[in-house]
Length: 407
Ligand code: MLT
Image 1 (cartoon, rainbow, N blue to C red):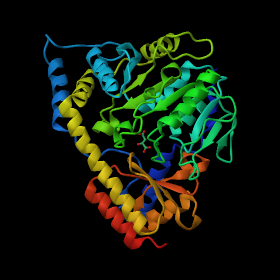
Image 2 (image 1 turned 120 degrees about the horizontal axis):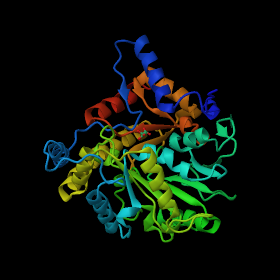
Image 3 (image 1 turned 90 degrees about the vertical axis):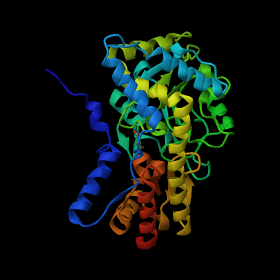
Image 4 (image 1 turned 180 degrees about the vertical axis):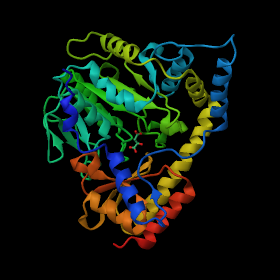
């Protein structure tokens, strides 16, 4: 008798983005002439740059030739790509080894799967609001009870508020697994060295592990802010870092990311190297490696020319972020983020709930955004706009908000 994983039944009605898509479709059906402008999901829109296209083409050509054809590759990812990643981190002053990198098909699957190498009774702490994958993957695994008032029983929520600049302090109680995202999705806040150091000290003291999602690190322009948690002393003993080519290079559909499990990272019952071995076992059992064509593209991203072109892409999206931020502030709307991150986190005007503002923005300005409460209870009263989009579409959306939104 097969039975289902009943933990799925605990999940909130739907994953946030499908729910947004459902409401948007309903609006379009009711208003067939209206042009809907999408600033909701953080989905890249600009084409791949020339160096990266050549890298991908080179990957295809290698497969077309018997002398260079490859089938399954190195399980952790191509050695040259992992070495190029090692070189990237060395530019941040971080020393890592190639076998501490695991190349994958993106940060989302890695951030969902990483929990599987930890015991089911680990207490999990998340920033609130948070990228929903951290929470949902732990719910599905059975690490939580039911949800009440938007919070799952058994999860520890670290509220990110205006008062703490959307970067919380470590929990007051003992937890085992801590998810941190910086630059943050959804708030756009970036943790300083000191703020990360507090978490690292906490993790070392409690033998906890930090899962650090740095998928937006390339958007940091302030040289004083850390792009990797390993820039913080001690992090190599307690942190796993996840990152992605998606937003930096426009690989949202191409799919390529990496996870770093330093051999020095330990936790209760795990000696140096054990966590690295467990993730290796997990990946080689359940994943057959990232596409060899795509890994050639990744190598091109990390080349000098690739990096220069990606900086151009990032600059483009960050100019969009400024357009949104300045445009909203002109209306008297309070905004956060959007400076070292491609997300603008705005305070809903007139005390509206996040979903009320979603409906108002869609109905009046025909703009789709993401309700803050969809990321966790502390997101209530906030709203996220994404800077990923064609500049002319972003400008049109901001104009529409300025002209049509009745405040
Ligand atoms: C988002 O909009 O939060 C992101 O696109 C989600 C993701 O990268 O998976």
